[in-house]
Image (cartoon, rainbow, N blue to C red):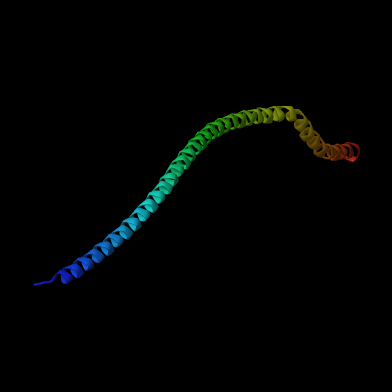
Length: 142
């Protein structure tokens, strides 16, 4: 059987083991608390980042919506401008056609006169030669 001294030694060793265990447990608890607080602070930072990203995303979506509306307005404006220019081009083409017809009508008389003058210039020498030939024939002919 164990003596009192042995019991005392065993109790002393158990007490030392208990205190070592308590200190180890306290250290682990401290480490766990510090890691937990670090994780909590990291989580808070991540949540702040997530909120900031959400806000940025919301602002970007608003800017995108404004841009899309602007593009749609510009598309409508450009379509109207294209339609107006096509209409103007048709009007200009019709006016040009009318002007060409009027020019042809106005130029008809001068062109007719120029062509008549050319014909007269060609016929005159021929008639002159015929007239001279006739005169010769009548004067010296049979």
